[in-house]
Length: 248
Image (cartoon, rainbow, N blue to C red):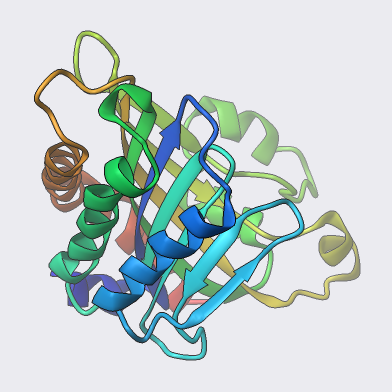
C-alpha cells in the first residue's frame, strides 16, 4: 500500500513519537547501549551523532531514497522511515524501538505523555505554497473573506484540524498542511523548490492502561490511521494537492 503513497507524492514518511512525562536518561553508557542494540537489528544504521541541544541520533545514510533514523531527545523518543517499501517495514522498526525502551531507557507505560503514529507526504513545488494551498483547500467563508480582497496574495495558509476519536478525547487524529514560502520570496517573486507537507497523526494521550504495551497501542493506532487515510485523507486531501501541483 505504501507504493501508492510514493505515486501520489515526491517523498513520504512513517514516524513514531513517544513523548514521556519524565526526562529520558542521557548517560553515555545507557544511550550507546540502546543504539548498539538497535544497530544489531539494523546494521546499516551506522551514523551516530549528538546535537548541541543534547539530542542523540542514529541514522542510515540520508542520500539513500529509503532510509531509517531514530533519536532520543530530552523527553521524546522518535523513530522514522523515509520512503519505506511497505507500511510493515516501517512498523517493524517502530515496534522494535518500543519493545526496547522499557528495559533499556526505563520508560514504563506509566511514563507515557503521548504516543504518535504519523504518516507524512512531501510535494516539491516551486511557487507560492500558501497561494496554491489556499486555491486547493481555501473554500468556505473564512478563507473567502480575505481571498476576495483585490490584489490580495496569500502569505500564510496552513489548514489544520484535530478531532477526538473517543469520548475521553485521549485518542485524537490531526491533519495539517505545512507550507514553506516566505514573505521575502513573495515580494521578490523568487521561489525555491521546497516541499509542501501534509501530516496525518494518530495520537494516544496519557499513561497506558494496565497490561497494555506500547507495541499493542501503536499497532492499534496504525490500523485506525490506515482506515482513515484510505477512506478520507488520500482522496480528500493528498490527491487534490498532487493534482493541483501537476497542472501548474
